[in-house]
Length: 96
Image (tube, rainbow, N blue to C red; front, side, top):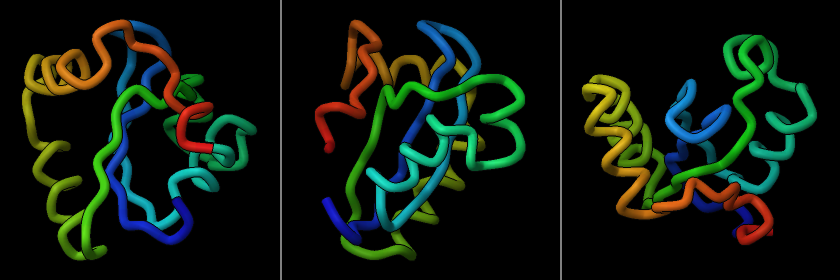
């Protein structure tokens, strides 16, 4: 999954704090979050579990989708996660 535009959601725990991001390298970016190499929100609130992601054909599409999701109501985000990952497993080992 090297250099693939992607939108992702991290969670601290099930139904916990959520973070929506965009990247061109999902494995590398999640590794950075897990190792506290990304200053800011995810480091401050220990939001490190990859619970949802979506691949895109271009970075422009991924950025557009990220912005849309960030404007969603929390309930919509929870529904999106639960449809894709009903047990809120950390998906990082699966994308390695």
